[in-house]
Image 1 (tube, one colour):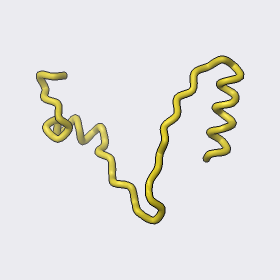
Image 2: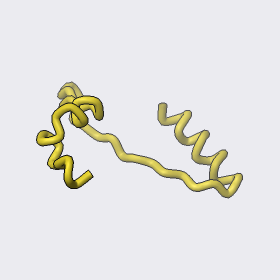
Image 3: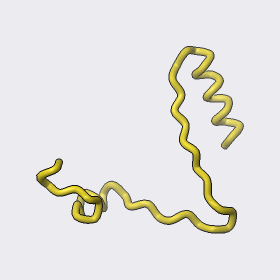
Length: 55
């Protein structure tokens, strides 16, 4: 994955295109916490900190 990311970043940079990267780190052997899906946020807006009025 790192090799492919580097290849793509170099290709984009050589073409003058912007590159956006995220740093994803976690402890080895410790599973990452689950992320709430957007579908669940739409069904349960109170769980995401938004109200219908704020949308």
